[in-house]
Length: 114
Length: 114
Image 1 (cartoon, rainbow over the protein chains, first blue to last red):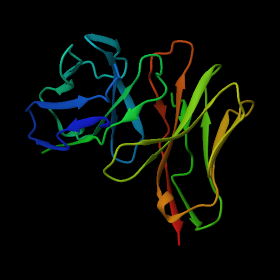
Image 2 (image 1 turned 180 degrees about the vertical axis):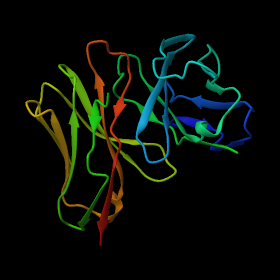
Image 3 (image 1 turned 180 degrees about the horizontal axis):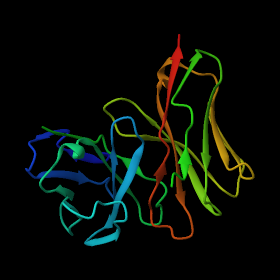
Image 4 (image 1 turned 90 degrees about the horizontal axis):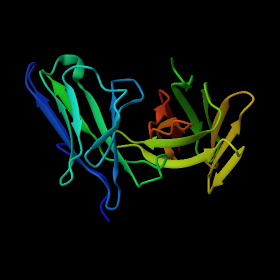
């Protein structure tokens, strides 16, 4: 009974490159959430997705960031033209339908932008 | 607009004693509160939660108290153990819009000394 899986665990990019972060939810979970943790801060909500639908993207920066959760395969958080300020830990969480508050987190992807 | 605040960045207690972690919140009527524990380089792990219709919830060594009039909640760990040393985040979920977004505090680093 695997938990939430994220890969890669560590990702290094140079300024201007693209970063793709992947998240596979727990088995039986249809809701995925992405959070970002900047150094010395708490986790900040970015986006909430269900299969093929973005439900709430109120925490996503308006430019360069996008997320999807296709019918098949993992959820992807994509950051285009990365900048140093994008360096952070990105956590994915998943939940069952109708259990929005019981979110289980993955180990995170630590993005470093050089 | 910080809806969840943890004003103590760190706390140190002796093994066997009580640890009390505090959290203040704003803007809630029918909310749901959660505590997560986080070790370095890992994702947050759910600990305990409480609905705003209750004022106490207990699970083993962990008890969460909710004071709605003061908009304050606290997590008590008794007795504290060295393995409890971690960062603790309180989070607010639920609400009438129920978008699935969790709002986290900044975290409190607990150190339990043997």
